[in-house]
Image (cartoon, rainbow, N blue to C red; front, side, top):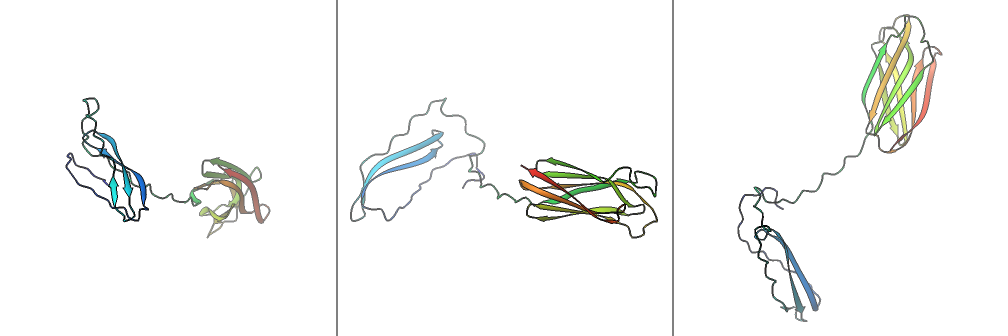
Length: 210
C-alpha cells in the first residue's frame, strides 16, 4: 500500500501465480491504474487449463489507447494513496462531564421558598439535570453529584460535603451534565437527603436518547 509518494514514476515487472485451477476455459481480467494514460486499464484474455494443469492463452493483450492532451492532466505532486482502514469506533461510556452548585439563595436558617424541583434537558447524547430549591447546610464545602449506570437505569446521587456544619440551612441550586449516553430509553433516579423532611428522597423521570 502506497502511503507517501514521490514526484516520479518508473518501470516495474509484477507477477502473480494462481494454483489449483480446475481444468476448463477461463476468462482472465487484469486491471491496473496506468500512469501513462492516467486512467484505469484492464486486459482480458481467454485461457484454457488442461488436465496436466497447463494454461494456454487464446487472446492477445488489448493495446493502450493513445491519450490526448485533454485526457492526460499534469501529474500530481504526490501519487494517489490508498486510504487506511478507519479506526474502530470507541463505544460510548456515560460519565459526568461537569457539575456546579449555587447558593445560598435565601437568608440563613430559612427553608427554600418552593419544593424541590428538577429540569431535565436532552441534547444529542448529553443529559443536563438542574436541581432547584435544594436545602443543605449553610457551611458546606461543596455539593457532589455522582453517577452509576445499570443498563438503562441512570442513578444520580447528590450529597453535601460539610465537615464542619453550622446550625443553619439555606437554599441551593445544583446541576450536573452527563455525556456519551448510547441511544436508548433511560429511567433516571435522582437521590438526595432532604433536610426539610429529614429523610432520603428520590425523583424519577424517563428520558430518550436518539
